[in-house]
Image 1: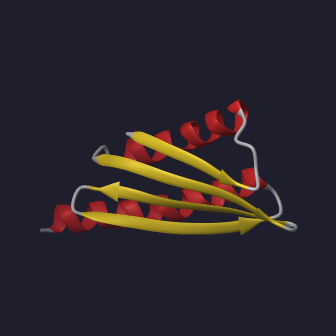
Image 2: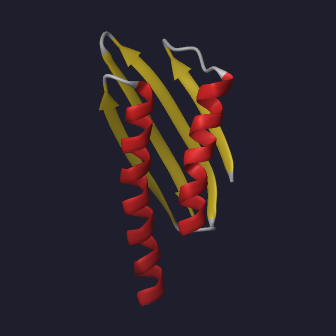
Image 3: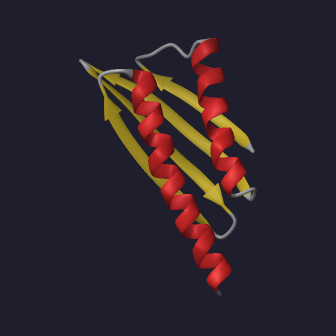
Length: 95
């Protein structure tokens, strides 16, 4: 799994990069056929935004999250993506 992490109006520190990669390992445990992940971290005034597009085998999954804290925004983003990836995996196994 390749994670492409970019930031708009925010500097991507090593600790932030480590946090994002450790959280995306959770997704890889649920579904191992993740090809590419594009994560955009954005700061607009007091809101911290995290967006991600995950390329799976056969489809792409997108989620976005906003919070006052960047780490909390990443946590809710991972939760949203986790639900979508599990739903996609269940669709594949049902066929």
